[in-house]
Image (cartoon, rainbow, N blue to C red; front, side):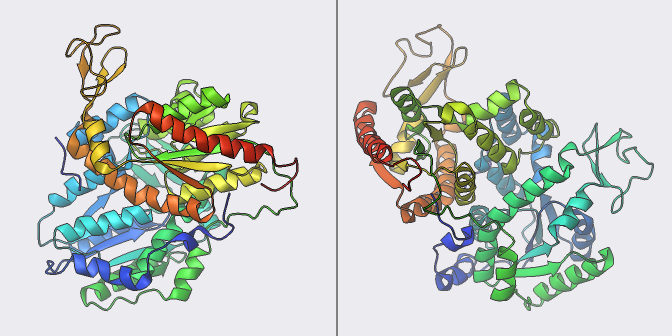
Length: 516
């Protein structure tokens, strides 16, 4: 069916990367020993940097296979591939499409590229975990990503550029008033459909999107700079000048003479990312019981978050529920998310972050909250710190439920669900009384496609790549409390409750206006 799946710091997010530069510099080379001699390039940068303007020319000049994750996602949806059907199922349920589904699309596409042909990745990777995934994927096929070329453009220039973007209402083909105008004004060159402006290219939304991009890109820039594969090109020049610079860069790669960015150049680029603001001790801090639950798939995180919410009389904020709520209630953020989904695109992180921020500003979280499903990554952790700092709050603690991969695999691969009423079962721990039939409504009980063992292993790889650095971030801040997820629900609940009671006691002891 599938391609084989392979608070509180005040410093910039990039400073929390833990790998030693000396070790990381050699890892991609070691993974690709005996590799084929093909050129594999990633062209990265935020929306509006001009990547799409130069792609066709580079692909033709260097005979590269080109993939853009947005197009790849849309094609899988339109062709109803196995991965496209899975992605559409998540979307139909009002859920965000998991990263491992997109990773699998990249993997499937790469397997179809002829062995001797080079590749150009357009807009991928966007995060450090994706960069590591891509290195592992290429290395497994004897390839190596020779360079990550970053198109650097001033943020306000990108705001102005994006104001000129157009998209076909019917086939979603992209155009631009200046850089890629249609042959006939207002009409798509491909299907004749009506062209419209991208509603999400309003300046305030673009600036938010850029902020989120820079926050995540800092860690990725650090990764490629440490491995000597980062090249920075000034994209804030005439199109032909940028085109020449890109052509010269790829020619240098073919000669194994990449003019890699210096540490100083990389530092300047990383500095564009947001710095988590410092909350000074003399500033008032609202002494609420703000908690985050972390845990891999199958650890029971959602179960315990919901239970804790009832027990502590605190809102349980699950990002999946929050996403569905915004879609169903057709809020401004829900409409924005739906526009992406209707175009066959992934909903970007800035929309999810905005949903979380709006939720944390509601009156019912005055005494605290149980946050489940966010943050998942280190940049999202920094985003949450910013949100809480703005609200003059700090996390009381982060509870991480630990379970071995083998136990998670057993739990998830045995999960069953009723097709009619969604009641959950498990072949070992909670089987239905009559095999194949729901105890509640008699409906068909089945195993979800994303709970087969191969998919679970892929989800675990994604979880470890993304979330382990987040645990380190909270550990360094003195907020992380780890508990074993082994045993019954009641046993795990006892461990979690002991931690939460102590956190509540400490938080209650904080005087109003004091520092926790």
